[in-house]
Amino acid sequence: MALAPYFHRSAVAASQVLAGFDEEAIRRRLEEVRLELFWGADVVDSAEGRALLDLSIRLIGRLYPRIRLVGPDPGDQHEALLREINPEIETADGAISHRVVLGSTPAEGDALNLFAGSKDWDALVSTRSPQDVGDSANPFGAGAAACFAAANLFRSVFLDDSQLDEDLAFSTLELDSQSTRDPILLSASTPQARTVLVGAGAVGNAVIWALGRVDTSLELHVVDPEPIEASNLQRYVLAGTGDTGLPKVDVVRRTLRASVAHSIPWEEFVATEGYDWDRALVALDSADDRRQVQASLPKWIANAWTQAGDLGVSVHPWNEGACLRCLYLPKGVVPSQDELVAAALGFADDQHRAQVRQLIYNGQPAPPQLLEESAAALGVDPNALLAYRNRPIRDLYVEGICGGAVLPLDRVGRPAEDVQVPLAHQSALAGIVLAARLIGDQLGRGAKSAAATRIDLMHRLGSHLTQPIAKDPRGICICQDAVYQAAWDEKYGARS
Ligand SMILES: [Zn+2]
Figure 1 (cartoon, rainbow, N blue to C red):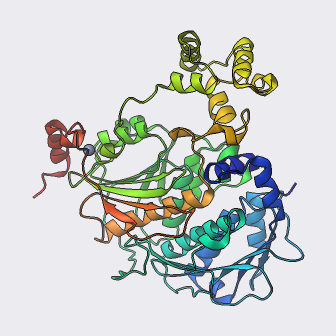
Figure 2: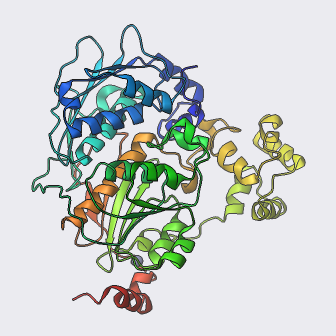
Figure 3: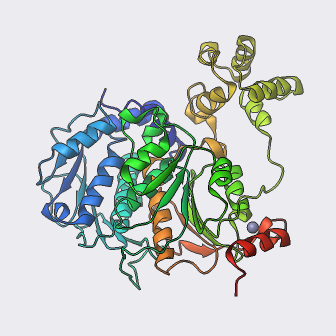
């Protein structure tokens, strides 16, 4: 009962990173967890601490069904937030199995303890001892610490404890696994740059969570044409169960008052608002959409991704190393969507493929006969497929086949790029690092040439996380094309 209404979606996400766990095994394991979130007075008394606490609740409240909040301030607002995220949540009573300790106050009682703190740009997580929280107004270290703590909690619950971060420090300014070597103060003054966030999904939510806590006069345009669906709640840190059906940009606007919401597709946005953008934050999940943003030639791009193996952020100053399109050029012959869907339904012949292509093109459901043939080919109960008789065939593919509603998740295999479901803490960290890239660049601490930062939250944090990225070697990208280069130069002035 205590699991969130969107638990199925969380199970899909968890199964994509955990070998050998199906939905039932994930449910059983989560039901066993008795989690305590503990914080002391230092957390309540500092902006960093409050940020750490807020995001911790928003992350763990989505997955764990039994949580006890233990802190010095009146807990009503935090309990209310938990309930907004999961109305079914229960208070953990009795013996605690796992405890997340925020700030420097030690907690009493047995349990596996994960300690989280922050110092300005730096996230601090430890299995050994309580961590301080800094007194700056910078939310980036604290936000990242909440994500790393949630990732360690996840690994402790589902894997063994050998992969926990014993003493982690991560700089959101320098993007490496050590404390910031050359700190810079977060300043309130903002250069007047035209800045746009493309995508208000899971990553975009975390971008806004962070920017909403930065004292800035930045006017941020946010572009996303879609409404919030119930399944999004599994990883949208700003959304509660009451937000289903609202435009995604509306939920963002609630948190960042200085944002300008555009509930339209990118091509319509640039057609009406213009093609000159000093900085574009790309929080999209398809390669096509990313290539489209790059082709409209913003001056500077930062891009975030999440996938089963890792998450990351890349930055692209034009013409210095790879552009965004270089990263997302097709690497070879990719199967067409109708081939992917037909194969997933168990069909390899041209006749079925043509029928599937037609249904995708028209947005129609598969007829019962096709569903029965598919059930026979896959060896599953026809009723599981017939449940999709009135829904577009793409829903059957995304939800039923890739999402595990028809085929058991352990039979699904590696999901195609566009149907991967990240865990909440993966998307949130990608968004926080993306927002940190924007502010770092504004403060004159951006990358001089294209670079990518990769983080794998299923393992201990590695080193050398950030690497330069070169242009596509085939010379076929728009950044190697004289016409596009001239167009960019004309917009922003030729580089000296
Ligand atoms: Zn390129």
